[in-house]
Image 1 (tube, rainbow, N blue to C red):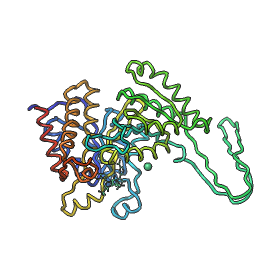
Image 2: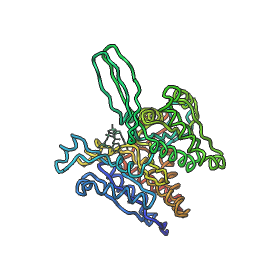
Image 3: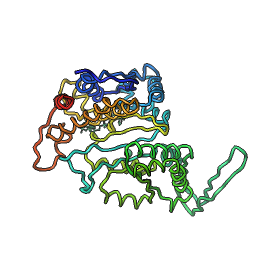
Image 4: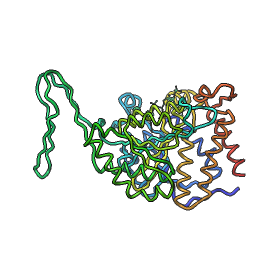
Length: 404
Ligand code: NAP
Ligand code: MG
């Protein structure tokens, strides 16, 4: 069989630990036998980031800007414990995802992969719910303080022009806690654009929720910017028959639970943090959650939502075989190849991505799965628990059959 050709390189970002092991297996078993793979490779493994003084992460993000599509393996974000584990680290390097997100100015969309034998906890959820979380500001960039005596707190803005604006926050008669948060027009606008663009790309309705009845100026600004930006996208929404729907966060929560899924829920930073954990848990497993970073000008970086699965890696280092779930990482590859195919007008490449996903789902529907999933399967369905390698071999068999 002739291998599928590519035009533009895909930006490939390798990573750490167990996911790095899976990365190599996925390429060898599922991609390289079928695709004449053309990637620009960046090693974002921790030691390579350290050796380049994290230059490699910046280069990989810039390459994504240049070529438009990237696929990323999970990476270690060093903390104190990692500094002890890797004494050669010269700095506690920042989260690569944070670095890439700030260079691409993107929004992260997370969606679960559904299979028939694992039902969501919410039984009316038939289709995936994608959460779009704004990743800048609010409580995550706020400052707070405690005061113990009676008094008044004020909030002052000093403009570069010299203009000042002061508000009284509150007069208190005893101990009190205070917090000041902000967001920026530019960041909210990028968030809105990325959401509208992604809704069009995936042909799904977009919901957006805030608490603008209470935070009239703050959340009101989010709503106003979304309304302004929607004007540009409305004709495309109309043409595709999809809708943009704004509602209060409490109303949204109730509607999401009663819904059948199949839409994108855009959330402010805190709401997205909390709700994405709720939605992903209700759908099943973190190992079945995909993630894509979309920039407002249409650049895409695909990855799994989970981390490097450290505990499995330590067992792997001891020579044990592990039953680590590669599905979300496979879908990162298929998502990136489909997008590359679409942008380069290579229908064979897009079809390959579709077939790779279908072969993975076929395998799961046949009851062949990794350990994390076997306990979630509905009663009465027989399952065979396999190691990662066997699981990938089973997918490869089905993929080869599909590709004829
Ligand atoms: P994690 O790697 O997602 O793993 C948490 C636990 O979830 C695992 O120990 C495992 O449970 C289960 N799990 C996650 N993915 C799985 C899979 N594919 N198959 C089977 N089980 C899976 O998160 P973490 O332990 O908090 O973080 C580990 C490292 O990953 C950290 O260094 C962190 O910085 C990094 N991280 C990177 C990213 C990213 O690059 N996007 C995201 C998150 C975390 P059991 O051990 O019980 O089987
Ligand atoms: Mg969280």
